[in-house]
Length: 131
Image (tube, rainbow, N blue to C red; front, top):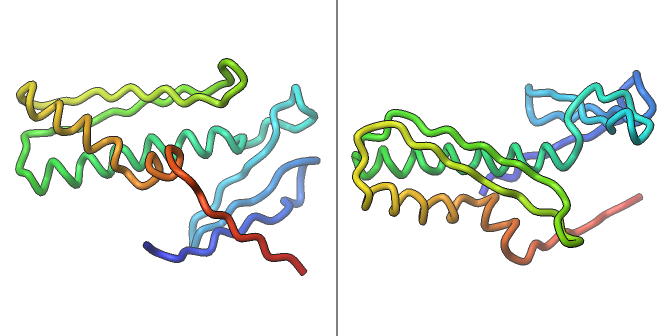
């Protein structure tokens, strides 16, 4: 596992806006206007849902390539929200290509093995350091 440093710093603008940096890549996180933010960027839950969708798609493409499956592309939609007191992610996967039912079943099993899915489904260890 890569040990990337994800830096989150207060942005110059907005009450809740923060800049998220990973190496040369940057994005803005913010709170929605309903919660006092400017709705100028991703809300944290959306970032988590995006991580699940992106990780799923990349994992499936890598697996299909290794297995020489005729997967042309894969689309992953993730909806997220509260349900029965828990935060729930619903993931929908659409495969393109001349795939058999067995290949699609195999891909569906692999989707649950993407690292973000595994982290969301299991125990996560978070170590907090402060100064």
